Image 1: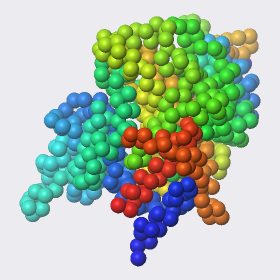
Image 2 (image 1 turned 90 degrees about the vertical axis):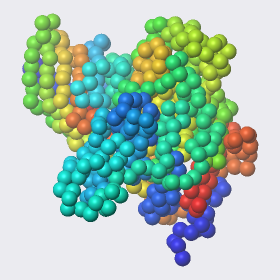
Image 3 (image 1 turned 90 degrees about the horizontal axis):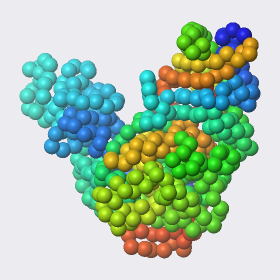
Image 4 (image 1 turned 180 degrees about the vertical axis):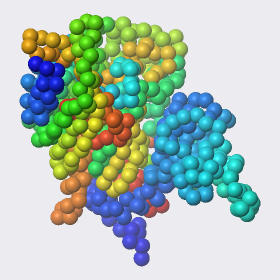
Length: 152
Length: 435
């Protein structure tokens, strides 16, 4: 599978709310990071909008399915538009993939548009990939934002 | 006749119920900006944000944009508005400067707000220019490093305003083995479409976690058990807190809840998970405790660590958790719109791991995409929509009413879920609004 196809399929899983299948794309040692600050280097001494290991990411998906997750009932409708894909191969054999994301979110009479620069670290597995790391730099991460109950 | 005279306002805030217009009427919001946010001491931040001469940060007092600046000898709070044509002189953010220079016509002011240079200045009458400045906010105060200001030239002292709630700040600062705190680790900013009072009321509400936070409680119960001492997961501190939100009713009812005459409130003593608070047996905690003992001696260290305060609300614009070193400042924008800034603090001379715990706690519990905060925000917005309905007029605040216990300097709720804190906030509100 091409890297582009992989990213499109990942986006499709999120937009079809197939969150468990999306989660399965992540390696056991994966991290999922949405930094708070522009150019943030440090995820442990500076706050992050999301900084999840595989365990926290799984719990986040479980919360989305809970019958009394008020901010997630219903889950927001989303459209993840992925573009500007640039692939580079690391010495380790893993791929670093930069892309841009335009995301439209709709829930409870509110529509929001997000823009982000995204970096995936992909590990080849069989005919596909697993995500070893995903970093999403929102263009407005430092703004006053309303609560975020979606996945980027 | 004034639309909102004393009798009218007093009708809206009764001992055990509040009229919906207090949360939903734009005219009342306008009056609050003038009479409440224009009079009360408001917390602005912490002195560590302006350590060196020239350091500044921008913030708001109610809707007034202000700059907080270290003037070398003291800290000034200046209205961020050029005397000339009204532009905000200082862009929003932080920095260090000798002069504040207006981007419009280059008028420049020193750190005390004095007008120092006016391009094309000869065109003005000099006696006019002589009286112009970046207007200083009349009263500035500092309690143990926390910066306050009041837009009103007169009123009670900061210490009298804080009253018994000083003890919560004392707890916050005393826990630092170096005796000092510093703001660090980034600032979360979040917004919601709801009245500013909704957050302050929620933060002392022991009856809401089991319902609002049911989903994060359930998920946290399924999280991996906390790691052994020295092998904790990054998120253990947050998971413990979320599990604690699901504590049985008896735990909440036995929590202490106190409220002061100015509407401040604090709760304590509800954690049954001793490791959350004292972490005995944990090597990082032991190191921290030893450093505290070096500073204060064993008896004082023991006294400090036995304090189990939870949320404290400083009415009308602040909420903090001394145990977890988190402080939130709320900025009212409109009757149905509020901004909240969430700050994390590092304790001087404490093991760095404790600061990492603060950051993990902030991300998972208080952050904009947290499992916990997002459900609170959803509820605030639903309350606002409910209060915009005119078909039902009143909201109830009578839980425990008539059973409050007067203790020195504060009223104590009969049980931990008493709404004594909302009643106190509303009494303070009425006092400011009708003074």
